[in-house]
Length: 501
Image: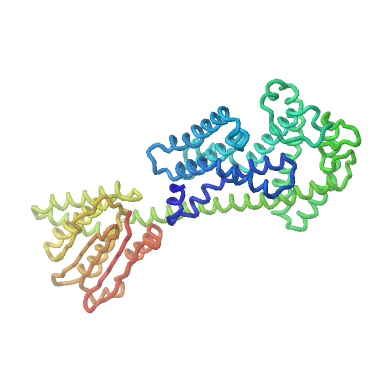
């Protein structure tokens, strides 16, 4: 219990509560099935069964939640402890103590339901983070709405066939208890198969109705011709198919019963035009239509989100790969001049330029890099500028003492320094100074850059460079950055704060 409360006390309450829903739903399904099988009208007994079952299944919830959180070295061992060792110990105790066996509600069916619910949820969440893997793609296709509906109908036919097989002439001795006798499943398998194949016909009919509703009534008629056509088609659908389908299921041997015995049709009798048959079809459409529409909307939204994500990646790629041609051409011109005079600085200029281009081509393609590498790139750029200008630029530099293992998106900080040199330093005729101070406070980086202003270029100081930087920051660090650039007396000041990871 303490583990659950500690997990739910943080800021991710909703995430952990949502993670519990699949297992909790499985527990409630088992509790309701057990209560309904008793055919009693007792609210007190209803609460007792569900609360006691919830208490017995508490280790399932804890194991599922701890596995989902994934803070342990072996989450698989945690899951197996809760979903395997615990139920085995419970069933062993039931064999030893007859009193406990009569008291406990945790059955094999409940264990299977909770285990499947937990596994499906955990696998689906894991595949969300790795959608490109083969297993992830297979799982996503497997849990499509069509497949889920088909699996539910097959499971229903299997379970109900097992329940019918657990009784002697169940339809002639109604009502019968909703129990699944595993022993009779093996000893009287031929009879189980007799029931299962006929209930499979029911499953095929219901699945066909679902497919018609989704792909004909909703996707074609509702999407292309509007609500009025859809409603009219549903009425025709109910009026024509209902008696035909009821007549079909009445031909099955399972419905070959005396007139006074209720058969397996919505009306429970031989009348194919009974109002309950039409009511069943009506409620089938009422229930399945919003589910299908919700799923279709979710699929459409997922596709839109994926398109938006790809557009964001493309925009980032374009912004990130932009190389300042002004800087590159000026550097090459300086290099040409130095080689003509056989200057001793030419090799250093080539080395720094190669380092910068190498970083831009290789590290610049990554989503994040070590802050240490980004600062080293910035230092190489400044050293290159010193060589190019023959110390025309005076740099007042402050670097952080420690950067730990912090990461940053590449080629962000360089834009501010390039902008200061292009708009403030290069147009100046006299020696100018650039102040650059980078500090780290916990995980927050602060960059302060100040340079003198040339009156002819003051209006264009916020050019394409800072505009691109602002766009990248909005895409990469939403609500985790501030960027200000303003005139202060005869200087231009730019300040960037960034929360790093």
